[in-house]
Image (cartoon, rainbow, N blue to C red; front, side):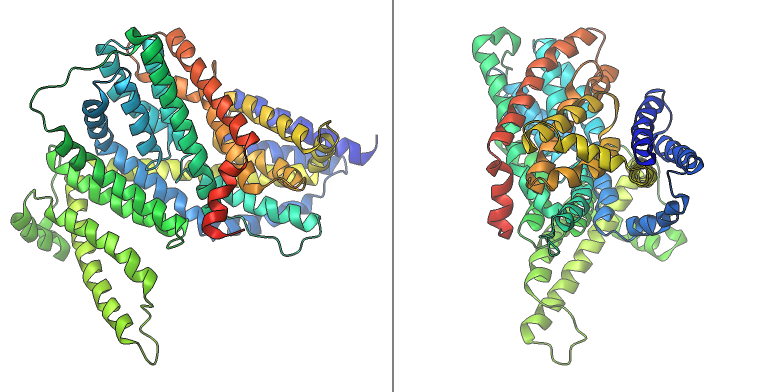
Length: 550
């Protein structure tokens, strides 16, 4: 047999073997790397694979370690887990329920709205679905909601973290698409391609995410009109200051979202810098919320200088939210100061405005630092900090070890010629770019039944991305389409991950079939949304063009 053909066939067999081993329950990272290494040795024995190619892995790994964009992943994870563990989601749900609950379907609208806020602040689908299921599902059932509608609303709103920035999916996808676009443009003879950044993908995903939120809410309102018994209104307690509670509960997380996304979209901060701002802001919000929580442990303050200082100052401020509020204002004030002024003091001549801005920045930094110390102490004593740090390390390690294992898989796949046979298949399909895009979307949709989004992003996108982009597809539009597609696969029975997350926390009165039947209308809405973005690519490309130019 022709060695080239044998290598291409072997690459497809390797891909299928990896999928089978993953379905058997083996760890993803070790499955990808182990399968690839085994087929590399087999290919070397058959004289169709150059084993020294594996020597380039060290440079790939080093590239991952020095990639500043990927630093945003653990920071966004920390931000999301901190907000989830500090009961901010619970307060949001209760408050929005009071605001919209008197409408038919109002509680469902509240769940979708809070899901949107959590998506824009956490980006972690599993945590969002579980949190929403624990908090809102019993309330919706008690209010008389149809279990199918309640399940569908919770699962669909919980997966908005896949598409609404700052999403971890978009961070990983943007980094991979950047390399894929460069590779495609070089192949087309363009040696100075326009860069594709995570910021572009964030901007491109914003409007499609809002479109999905609007479609979800429209469906709940339609159910309220056509079948009012499935989503009855709530009865509000007389004399309760709903407006004041909305301002107290909604403004802080909304302000954090505006601070993080706004700094990215206006170009004041990179995604990594904005992720750092979000982590600090989440810690401050949690420090404010931890005041109402019981203390489970104390800090041995007199054993060090910081502890002594915190012991003395804590006696003064007590449980007052003032230090956290002041620190939040300092954080918000630092962004325009560092953006509008040059704070480098090593220059020979420093203009007076810059010198004044430097002093202001020092004062704001001191205020921020003090509020962080207060917040750290409070979340530590509430038992939140340790759990958040452990979860952040676990999730971040999972992401990066899968990335390293996928690097081995991708290298061996290309070494065997797999990228060539995939290119031949996609370019030979009828319909050109449309046919190729349709097949890839269908493949990702099906793979989403069985695999997590991380495996699909790390394994499939590096293979098909350069091929599709070489067909003159817009990389931002392609990234948004992939993200929405992966979000749809999270919802689809019988293997949708979001369904299993909800099943794990749902009461026995909600059956698995209730969850499956309830999610079907939202899967159809997702597909409609995907078709709308496909028919009107401007929804994904207009905002990046308006903000950053062509």
